[in-house]
Length: 316
Image 1 (cartoon, rainbow, N blue to C red):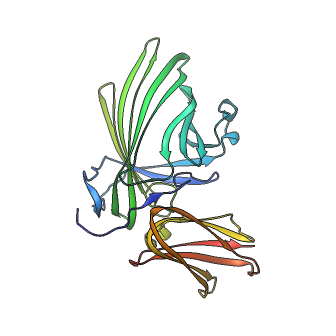
Image 2: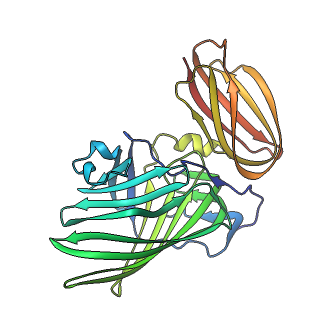
Image 3: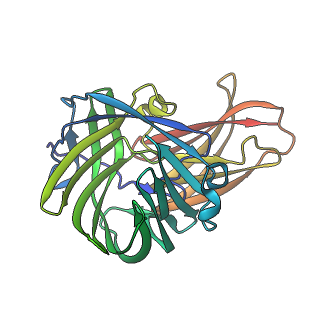
């Protein structure tokens, strides 16, 4: 761990909500240890080794075989025959339940996966009660989730160095109880988010279930869409709708004296806007696009310390 200066990144609204139709390939390997105190310096995981790859396929809940069993869910992902269901809303991403070859579970209301917006030194504790079946045997689940924004700074990975990364520690504990079922667990999960990417750059999971320990580390395939852009950007940016017509909504997490620049497909500056001096947080600006020719453009946000982020989008 080395010392250095870094803005405190923010996981914005939708910051962990992977769009339906996306497939994220994750590499799995032995557990690596998070740095115990990461506050603006560098956390180095360049030596990570991985042995297998698994695809997480995201879709709308309605597009899955058992989507009707989870009427409150609007997002799902499948991996190795297991479907996980979520409620994706402006306040966060909540777990609604799952189906698998050995049973299913339904949580109403769901319980917290990630909170929006979220940043360093922020904390939230939530609880949940769920019902399910394991190979036909009913069980009930009581659980607690503690989210902590416990680190930020520069993350070194085998495929590059990423600035302005937020680490979220998710502590998940609980118990499943039914006839012949008594499962107790405590899981510490570390997620490393680069604002602007909706999947984590690194996941470290340390789980103890009924006294048995299981730990692993995961990272996305370096070729995933958005990785190259995340390497180049300090400030995470989202632009919607895509394509844009009359206006573009630009959401970003940043602080300090900020400027916005619109760049056309030839790399020419169309205009520059002074966004003023901002305290750390998540912001949204609406920019007028009336009269602009159709084509590819980019919005760039810069701060007074040389940090910047850019996002390409289409004007139609």
